[in-house]
Length: 328
Ligand code: ADP
Ligand code: MG
Image (cartoon, rainbow, N blue to C red; front, side, top):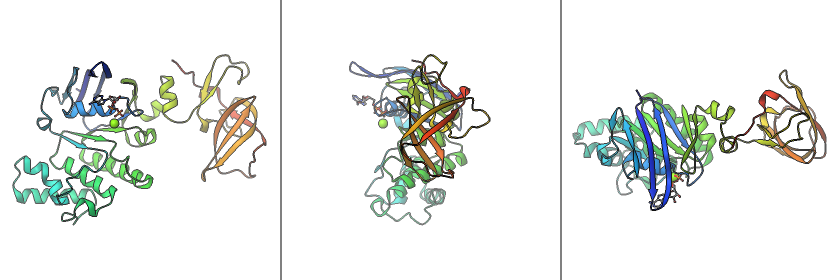
């Protein structure tokens, strides 16, 4: 039986329907991402699960219990927002203990739990600090500790990393994932960043304009996108109009990293083009190659024996099996 179940969930603001009948079911302990562009309804879904927003119709169940009409504080959920959500006038310890105090936990137990949480997030001894004395990444770890301290049944994270610097964003997402695995807590993570979603999720819900486009594990979504939207939103993609590949009619698409400058055992097609542009990214070199007027992006590992230059003629090697046919 599913642990988190959302059934025909609809939300309208006036005449504007922003969540259009969403269904999903997840198991206990899963790390789920809601992925999609800004405005597609991710936060609205999370807020309905949390109880801050009333669904127009539909149902939400956790562990078999219908929570659709419960008040937020009756749902036993933990939530972390984008940024700056700690109580600024409270210490770290008081922030983390906040939910425990409301739940009526005695002071000595609260202290023990705060210590345990601080160790878990790698900030032991920080209980007397104030939020303004800490970096954004440290504050978000405290926000996570505050959310999980009362042992919620579900953890809801709304773009908790998006205000942080790139390097911290990557290390903190790995930390969040490790803590989540450790605790086995079912988690819904909202992001518009496809790489972030792919790197940490068990399964991803790809959303567009209030609808689910595809639901699956990262490798399914990346390798077998079911819609044009998913194919282009998740990862880079070249679209090849009819005529680019001799003998194939109809549009095809292919990922940049599946095109190489040297043959591979699986390659069975070649295209000749001229390097129109090239970007050296360190480990990878990104080329834009003009093939009869169609520009094709390719990523090659930086293991070229001779440097490449704009204007060079190159042969591209690809495999028919890697060509995608994009649906609607
Ligand atoms: P996302 O989190 O994917 O960026 P949201 O769920 O925040 O998207 O918003 C989805 C749509 O619903 C947007 O068009 C937004 O303007 C609209 N919306 C969200 N909250 C409200 C509200 N309280 N009143 C009216 N429109 C809203
Ligand atoms: Mg949002």
